Image 1 (spheres, one colour):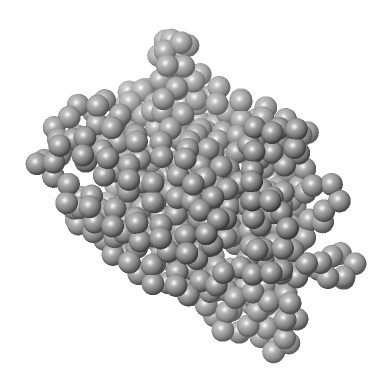
Image 2 (cartoon, rainbow, N blue to C red):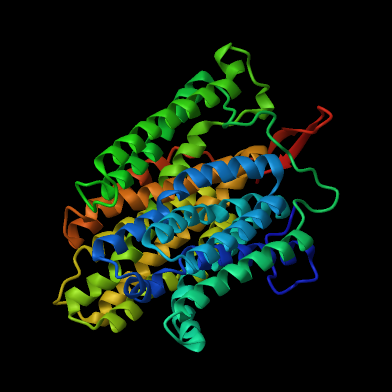
Length: 490
């Protein structure tokens, strides 16, 4: 049995060094992904953009991340985290530099769209960290990876305006953004030289088929296909936001072409899922020890939908909410709202630690219930509240939100080791789906109703979590020579 203690300062241990290598790689992907946000005023001035064009840039930045997380998950399972993370950092760094020195709106829009791919970097480390840490430590380790890495967006917001001023001139923003791309690319090379997919002597289990999750029954197969639908609906919503009926960045013809393309992609994905699950369709049973229940994946998907999805949505609207509710300046409102993101540093590791200590289902139950209550409280915030009390309510709610994220990914590596990348990719994509849906809801309702909608969704997820099965004992994986290996999951 492995000890549940984890000393993050003991860098003499290979696994601790690997954890620090991994969270910093993820940190850089978030710096690069969100490096445009603090520079938007300068970008707007440089290209003489309208407010609608700025909004379009923000949407384009996240549009590709939903399919990218699924694709990256497949690549990680097939090629290994080391080469995929390194390649993503180097390529993403190059795209970042392309954005920094673009000379037209069309070019920065295209670069921002492609930049959404680097938002899938999170998925890679989930599989990598899961390979290095035993079941009794994996929750805390994944929480540190996710929480500390996620802080990259806040770090970009806090540092890049100063870096731009240090470069000076009207192109200071370009050099500030480009510098993050150069750092990411260089770190990608460094990561490749220092990281390993598994500890020495361990096997990196790969799925026997590529193109989708290999499920255990025909019922799970239909469930899997159904769970793919919301990802395409979210992409359709993003297309609608860019269409003539909303922001107007796309023409009606272009929007219709994208809708048709999404339909074709869905049909293609379903065909691939059916292909890799041909044995299930033929009624050929999977060996009992290699089976897993897809409901485990589905519950984790909807849990991340309401945790990370709500976080992305709330972080996007909270500064304006504080500014309008309490008549604060933009600077002060932004500073107070930043407390929501700052909680990532301790909340995600805390959620993972709780999961390791008290159990996976119990901890997720507690945290989802807490965030439901938290959002109900936030729905009652109005101008009659003291500002300090509203900030405390916000930070308490954010703790449950982000600890819930940590609890979700404390379970992901324990479902099916050989397909952890794909499971993490699908779960991560659902986080972005949640953000799209919640922000779309916000465009039709006020802030109070927005928070209540999230709380209601959390109530539904709370019920779903009660059907989650606690990982127990071992799961079986196949070695390359066909022999069976047992992986401890409790």
